[in-house]
Image (cartoon, rainbow, N blue to C red):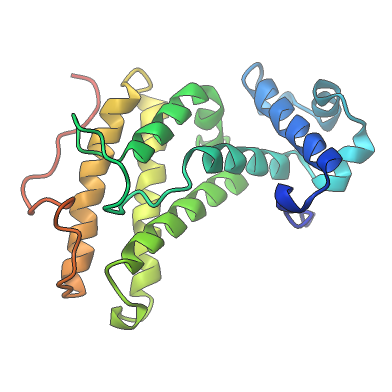
Amino acid sequence: MRGVPRQNDRVLDPRAQRTRQALRTAVLTLISQEPIEVISISDVVREAGVNRSSFYVHYSDIDELLADAFEELSISVNQTNMISPGVPHDAETGLPKTLMQYLEHIAEYKSAYAWALGPKGSAAVTHRLREQFRAIIEQSLLQYADRSTAVPMGFDADAAFLAGAVIGTISIWLSEAPEVPAKRVSVWLWRQLQQDFLRILERYALTNRPAARLPKRGRRPSNPGRG
């Protein structure tokens, strides 16, 4: 079943905004309490305090609602270009504060994200999160590269590659080492992104690189897992 086109809350009337927010909050609350497989639309509307017809005005099914809820969560935390030199960096670790905040946000909703990115999770949620990161990384590349410098498919493929690496790292963290603190994962992930981002820029033979934030190539960062 094809989903209802997503509407930006800012163009909806206040009542519709409240309904969508209530539905998003309800489904996130429910999946933190029980497996998604047993959650029905009736459960969601009961938790949200709205009627079933209101649900279908905004969403076609639970999966679409979940994708919207996760996207809204991540947007609220991470609207800033993570690899931009202008982004505030943590004095102790040197990593962008936005990246640390995003990983801390995921840790706060750990059970929900673990389900969404897990083997029985939502393809729609994973796709939206990956596309969100792809757009962020693409904006970063555009600060130092022009699309005309890229080989066919290279520019978009590079952004997609890094976005997939971010989502994959988060998935492994939540499924195999959830006890590792968000800050430690953030540091490791940022070092990985720096190495790969620099390699991409070198391939495009660019001179205007974010050298202040990207280190010289050295040994790969150690694994952030246990130990």
